[in-house]
Image 1: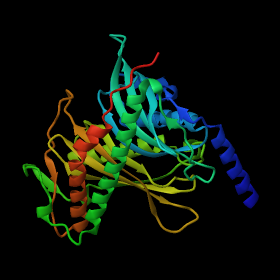
Image 2: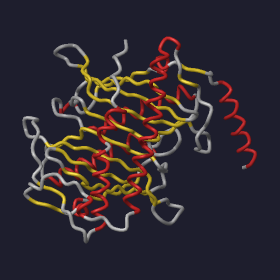
Image 3: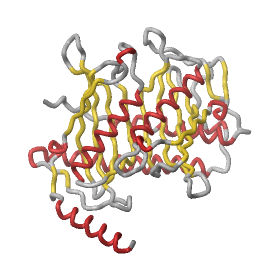
Length: 367
């Protein structure tokens, strides 16, 4: 066992020596394209889940090529829907590395659908994904090349500064979420509630849905852990169902995803439980918090592996915004619900800063 570990360490060090000192952003560029969805459903909207899966595959391949070794997804920092994608569409995803640290890299991914009538590609999705290079022990592998380009020096420096600001914002975001847990009690006056004009109100805990599954070997990636794209699609499906169950509306669409954090890998032997609940309701849209828990076969106890926040929009048959007539109950006797409401409020307050730092100029469609 010790000999195997030593050989592995030597291989990692040798692999590190083969990496270049610098890499240009444009040299990391890669594009995937495929006809998506079910042809029998042509013309109906594709859920966000399959797009997320393709994004994860593209970001993973880009990171693999840059790091020349195993990689893992750390987080989907943001995903925004610009235009819907329909079953039978030709979808093209463009991605490239926009910032790099010693062991991690941020990958920008943009989605496009080919419009048959005009023959042009329309921008549909924007995403920012953080990947990490790992060694054979699934630990961060240091020594990635610097991202720099003499022809785009200003751009590289700007992206480096933006990455630093994103890191600081993420730390402040986590700190404020943790501060809510540290409060002895959450009271109604701590909440800045929207106008109380809903027809009915329910407790956060009453909106929760729970699903449980065991994933098969076909769902595993090259690291023999659950493929992130499959998990993201599952999370999106649960978030959408939770939103529909809350509003009693079948016409809802995921328009955004924020801070999906990958805390623990999921193994083939793990039983996986997913919990989704509504935590914030506005006029036309709501937020669904999704938490994933693993129950390892060889250990007792359950551990949280992933969290994510999905923004779901309510629309009518014509695709126009439709008001949500149900709200969330404020009841100080239910402190778990009160903490969920306060955390959601703080996330909402971060939204503008998040948008400013995560909104990047869309990538062009490469030749």
